Image 1 (tube, rainbow, N blue to C red):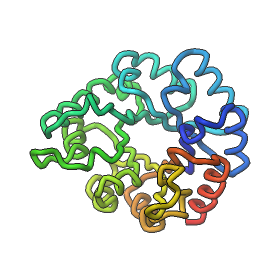
Image 2: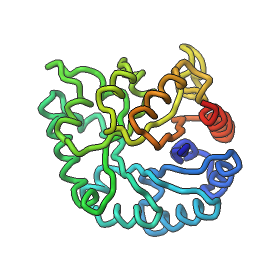
Image 3: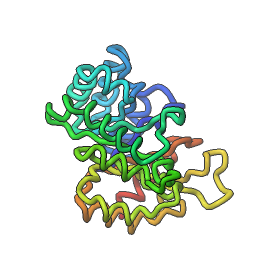
Image 4: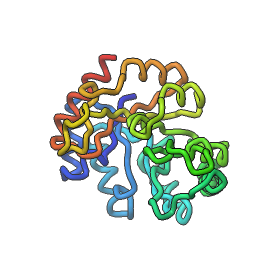
Length: 249
């Protein structure tokens, strides 16, 4: 399924209009983020917007505190919105471990926090940025250490962040195979271009070899493909062009 990370449209309210735009662009699914279901009111608004547009939300991002401190709420969100998989997407710089042991402990922490959600039948995992692929002083790679510490964790592979972290996404796809249950489909502009959009590009307009990567992801069984742009100047342009490109692969 081709879905859309609604964080891409956070600067283009209201959500109801965004969802209508996505449906018109031929996008079937969405992916949520923590702010869309921070409380009862925002959860109700999000549910109404995606339902009115005929969209689904099979995956969602949750802050670690939402999973660790309020698992019952995370489960309510998942049930209300029809999610199948929940991912924690980020850890602040000040909270990041500095060696392999620390990152393995963080993976174990995620594993423990997700336990009641996993027990309820949901897929649970981690979504990467670039810092997880930069070696620690002891030579360990944080992403690998996280996944070692949390052996039940699934992976939502943000491919463009893997590239920005200096790693080869194909090697990671081949290494972790079926643990990759979702992928963020985003693109990187040629060096020096799209600076006002933080160097990101519409999918198919940048330097990431998405034809090769989509084939590799599908080969290991990944079925959730989530379009994302961290700072688009025009979210409709991004959604429309990217969806058309990905559906043509």
